[in-house]
Image (tube, rainbow, N blue to C red; front, side):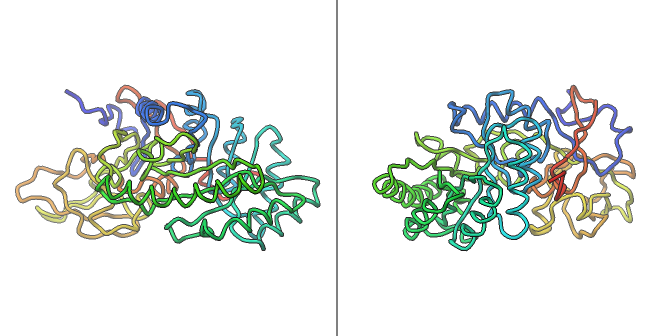
Amino acid sequence: MKNWYEIDNVDELDSPSLTVFPDRVKENIRILKEFVPDVTRSRPHVKTNKCAEVCRLMMDSGIQKFKAATIAEAEMLAMIGAPDVLLAYQPVGPRKLRLIQLIQKFPSTKFSCLIDNEVTAKELAAAANEQGLVVNIFLDLNVGMNRTGIAPEKALPLFMFCQLMKSISPIGLHAYDGHNRDTDLGIRTAGADEGYARVAELHHSILEQTGISATIVTSGNTTISIHAKRKNVECSPGTFIFWDYGYHKLFTEQPFVFAAILVTRIISKTDDETICIDLGHKAVASENPLNNRIHFLNAPELVPISHSEEHLMLRAEKGNSYKVGDILYGVPFHICPTVALHETLAVVENNRVVGSWNVVARKRKISV
């Protein structure tokens, strides 16, 4: 019986290529809705897929809110009519002007962004005021990720400061907790609960002092099985849409399926145990250790031994039958930066490539 990932017309597909399976994308959307049945509490992050067609599939399922990391991703969403887009990044430098231009160009989309300090708040407010706009903002909270954000315990004065600014409006709290990634769900749950308790306390203080019930956005894929059980938060996973081997190994309680596969070819066999394939750094995310970059579904025994821009060297067992031209189907360990390396996704239906989707938001700029 043919495997789901095998492609009948693979000889027509150049390699390396990233392929997408729409039926499996739809399955992952269905699974997300099992975690979060109320679609008003889903705000998927599009940094993983960067593709209008994929986002349309989510909108077709009833999802209306999204999160984006770049202006291009936010613009892609606005281009397909997404009603609500949170730019999960602070608009520092020219980005604040691009955000304002985006708001002006797509008035039907409700945009918001993150703030974690008074300087950025002042600069954004001044730029928005010049254009007669009010920009919605979420306070970016650091609950342990230690990347950006202000500690929840210190955030109330910032919220009050932003509320006094003429051209920005604080409407929510953003608390990404991707640092909670222990394979033990109990340990992961304890970490997520601790961080959320700090956010909930801040939320209560804001409500008491301002009457504003701020929207809480939390939960990437690492903690969706935890935060989805809370009644008043929006969950924003991203990796779920394509899934990858890294999360597959870590988060066994999440039944998402692989929906994007790398197709690569053996281009050289230097000896009986050494294989070279055309899957270099330019085609698969390579920030992880060498043995945590790709898992081959049809050749799980192959061991990576070196990696360069255009080539990946693999060690095979003695007496193997691999030959030049053979196809390998691989699941990236980290799908998000892998997608950003590809201009298009080859669309596979019923074991055949039937078209392609542009990864339009891999660009730094679309039009704004």
